[in-house]
Length: 421
Image (cartoon, rainbow, N blue to C red):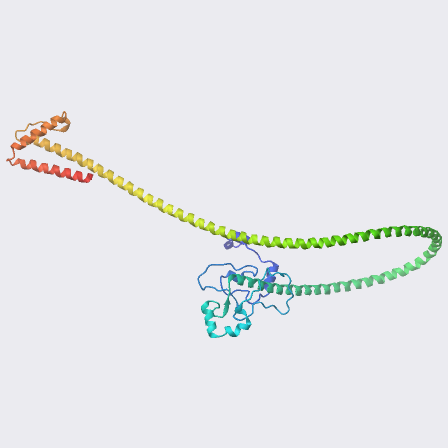
């Protein structure tokens, strides 16, 4: 196999191969209008027994047309046979279309009428009369019947030709057999002549035996004649009885035949009613199937859109979760910075206390770190002593440094409170 064809091996197995009958059908030309000049490419190779499907397409990309304006639709060939295969018109409906009425052609040939028909969408610009998809498929059935007639004529022609060829071959074979038969007859005539001479000698011997045999036969014939007469009498009696039985059977068969005809007519009527009922049920079933398919497609589309909306909501929820995580991380970072600033502020306060306790005049030199305080009361007393010492030194220059440190502390407290809020 060609390497390029290996990847299509499955498609090749499922592909329908043309048979000899399909090739015969393709060799016979189809009627005019059987191959559409519009639509999809597969429509041109689609067999006439297949219907053209309803395929949505852009407006004006194709139009279903059968023949020109004013040309007849239902035209049969001159040598066509009388077709009785569809007496009730189930296969083809012979509908009337005024656009294909040849008697109305003078009226439709007027320019203003043509412009009106083109503007109304009844004909194309090439004056091809438009029709519906149902009418076009019905017209394809009619063209298929014409094509089948052509195929039947071609098959009959080929059948006659093959019969004539076989007849010629048979005549040749018979002539050869006749020659052989004559030769064999000549050989047998020679053998017969020799046999006749021998049979004459044997005939004399047989003649004597036959005379004796004839005598015995005559006696036997007399006995048989007597027996035959008796047998004929018995046979006459039996035949008369048999004739009476046959006459009775014929009368009964006539009655049975009459009842059978009546039953057949009743059965035909019943089957016809059943067939009409089954056809109505089949049409109703097909409509129900189409409705279920439409509902199924609608449900699938509805389910798909619901899933799409759920997916979008899930993605939005993921974005919201990521945003909340980022806000929590940011808030945690702000809390850590707040705690660090608080500890820094406490260290600044502790440093200022220790500085004032050690460097202000009249202050006691002692360790003022918080970890060496016994309780909160010591710290409160220490702060009150610091305030008293500061009040004594208001007029001194070093008080400015004390006020500056207090302003720094307040500023730090303001910054911390602002970050917390």
